[in-house]
Length: 347
Image 1 (cartoon, rainbow, N blue to C red):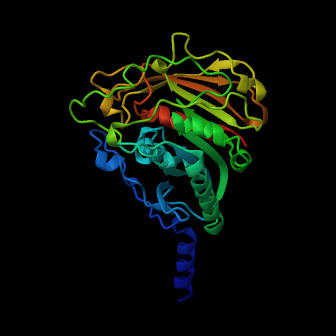
Image 2 (cartoon, helix red, strand yellow; image 1 turned 90 degrees about the horizontal axis):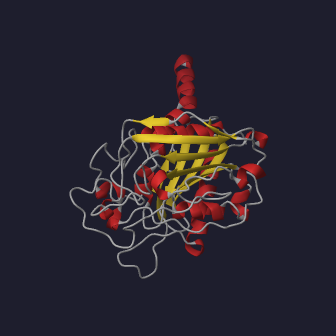
Image 3 (cartoon, rainbow, N blue to C red; image 1 turned 180 degrees about the vertical axis):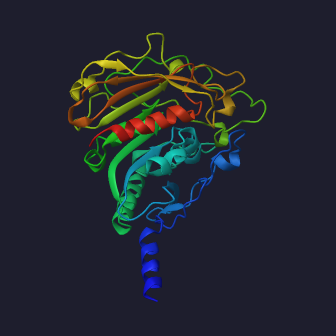
């Protein structure tokens, strides 16, 4: 009997944690297949609930998460006109949550008033409290379930990146966030010029299956204007963009943010090469398509530029996906490289 009790107690200590009533699934729920991701998947809202508003969101975490474990928490924001689960598959952190011990919250923004069809855009008046409540929920779960958040990152694509750039300067976020990854959402410290987005205003007919198309034919938004002045707090910063989103001048070779963080010379790292495409794209603007906005997802390579020796172990990095535009879903190797970069930063 004593042996049985001891065995049961040991099992209980090692049993996986369930966060906020969301059962962990392998593979993750509402995950796109490798090809022909249908709108019935990208339009799903998630099973976690922010109780103050009743709004749903996705909460992903390692299925074998245990008490006492250290994790990295990521709040990941979609672009204007998009939705949480399109973005969740555009930048598929969920593929690496178990390997790299990630807890990922992916919400959906409020709907623009009187828009037809409904269009989701981050709005401070209707969304800031919602996002703060999600962050508070995850931190409360870390205390209740006894795991430690060792770092907190904001991630945002397009207008989600511009929103993250604004949020990271607010009283609620500026003392919590350790890093910010901007996916085509503005470069802090001097950004590149914008390339030709061509067909952004009008949407051509979708020809063939719209693999991974966002609901309502909308995906990612055109970005947004981040505050011009540098934030007065300190954090690691990664900027990722498609080559064709920039004008002919390309990526700036200097960074005012790197200077602020006490970094040294910019160093080109080894390129990241992918032989598999990402999961999603904007199927509503492919007739005709444009290089700036983005074509079908496909393999490719990415250049990585890191500023050396930043103070307190922080990092400042630029990543350029060659031959890509604004909306092709990120490929697996470049996604993993961005995760590894986030985890390499010291608090």
